[in-house]
Amino acid sequence: MSKPDPDEVSRQLAARSLANDDPTGWFEVLYRAAEAGETQVPWERTAPNALLAEWAAGSDGHGKRAIVIGFGTGQDSEFIASIGYDTTAFEVAATAVSAARRHFPNSRVDYVEADLLALPAQWIGRFELVVECLTVQSLPRPLRAQAIAAVVSLLGPGGRLIVVATSIDPAGDLNAGPPWPLTEAEIGIFGRPGITVVRQEHFPFADDPGFGRWRIEFARESP
Ligand SMILES: C[S@@+](CC[C@H](N)C(=O)[O-])C[C@H]1O[C@@H](n2cnc3c(N)ncnc32)[C@H](O)[C@@H]1O
Image (tube, rainbow, N blue to C red):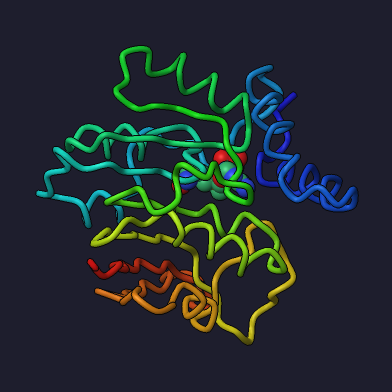
């Protein structure tokens, strides 16, 4: 018998978790089910996110600290470490952390269990590069402002934040999810004093023009 569609499994786990007022608990359940061979992690990849890799091509992270938010199956964090950054990567799901440590036994990445919505105080304002790919959109829309504020809080003076996210036309169904893609107005929530947009790009999906990808680079001013 074939396994159920992983996206459908995710949606069902998320619905149960959200009904129990637990917006992140389903990630651990999903990673454990994947470890048990019952499903797959829908966002599992074998290569770094192409928009992230293209953005970072040619950069040298030696002497700089990077943090990867909600690292998933670890390809982005391994890539960021491979271009020289002293890299921390965190996940709310403990099983994702143990899987990454096992999968990349010689990794230079420090894989850590942590919650974006309750960040360790020692991380605030500490990183020259913050990588946010598809994690803010995995949290329900009412948590958006809190999640985005937490993402931005990681940036050190002069640091860069790269955001890759799914876009949605504001006339679309904003309640359907996960994921809950970002409208252009929600991109504005990243903005705050001392944070500037270096470059904002949008890549519409050819087969579904109501959706696409954002790639946005933000900079924090140096004092
Ligand atoms: C859609 S996946 C994207 C994973 C990875 N960033 C990628 O692009 O492949 C979202 C990830 O964020 C993690 N996550 C969700 N909420 C989180 C939170 N509050 N703190 C840390 N990680 C979180 C989930 O466990 C999941 O692995």
